[in-house]
Structures are given as C-alpha cells and as structure tokens.
Image (cartoon, rainbow, N blue to C red; front, side, top):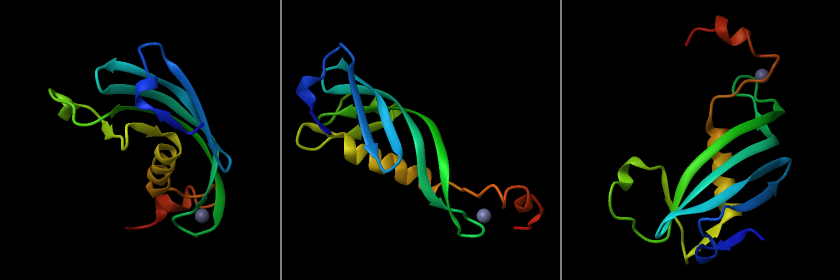
Length: 124
Ligand SMILES: [Zn+2]
C-alpha cells in the first residue's frame, strides 16, 4: 500500500515502508492538528548514482533522516516555518514522496570513493 488516505492518519503513529530499487523508506505518520500530518522517516539501503567527477555509476549507501509535514489543503497559521508538502486528492502518495526524496539525494554533490580526495586538489 503506497497510497494512504489522509483521513486514515490519526494521532496514533501509522507505520509505513516503501521500497524503490535498493532503497527503503520507512517511518511513521502522525496527525499533529487538523489537516496537518507529520512524517518522520529514514531512508536506508542504497541507490545507483553517477559520480560527479568521473561519471561512473556507483552504489551510494543511504542513511538519511527525513522529517516534514503533509497538509490536506491549505494550512492556516505559521505554516511558513514548516517544511510542508501539500497532498493531492486527500491521499498521501508514499511512492511519489519517496521518489522526490531520492531525486533530492541524487541532485546533491556526490563523488565516488576513487575520486574522493583527488577532488580536494582540483581548482574550481
Ligand atoms: Zn568518480
């Protein structure tokens, strides 16, 4: 089950786990206030990612803590301070959330173990 109806989340933390290639996204969802759900999760496993220096595809180990809020519609109040994702159709698409988290990780600077160290000598 990768789609969770917003209404199914209450203040009792709801566990989830989604997999994508070799990566696993697990954690829980809990209702903080009306229309606002907090997600606390961890991304583990690995992804295939090209090195930014030599372009070789390597497996990068993942161990990322992920915390953000999900809203069903617009949340009033001090939502500017929150890392907030608005869900569509009143359901939380865990697969899509995971995919965008992985995209974020992939967009970060990354260099493979054989380029590591040599990058320090490069002039940018
Ligand atoms: Zn490399």
